[in-house]
Length: 212
Image 1 (tube, rainbow, N blue to C red):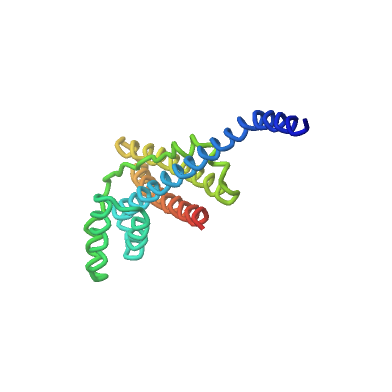
Image 2: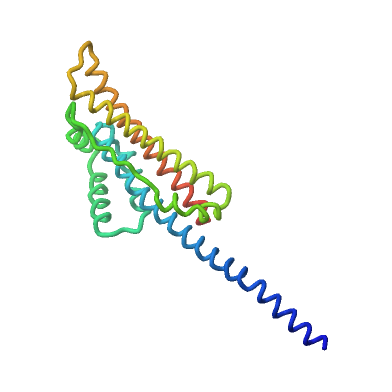
């Protein structure tokens, strides 16, 4: 008698908890996939921003051997495809040059006065969409992810300012205003390169925490 009651109760309990358990398993699986998607997205973003900083500093004439090594290091952290491997090999060959030769190379690559750059606006659609996966990370990782989003917003604001000042350079400005507009564009380029490096370093920090 008691065994039958126990079996009935157990069946009722399993029927009650079954959907809850299945839902918990489903959520965990979705969060695991979401976490992987976010980490992959940020790894790809790191490469893009590292190379963007290189392109800007080369244009500005501020690239150095130390900065070049930093870029190569960042590119090397990403699983290589054929295109990335080719770019990385090309940059590594530059390190074989003497300091004088390298300085001459970077000087020759400096953009002429007045030549503008197109700054790329980068987004993180997977990070933005996978809200539940975001909150499945530990507190430190969440903080870094939010800092990355904030830093990307700042980069977007820099792009808007650069576009504004670039448009001003095509207008007939007097009393030194044209030169100030050109200087402001240059300043925006420097700020964008610095912001790109900051985001890359935040991604590095995030990857280290989540793989520890």
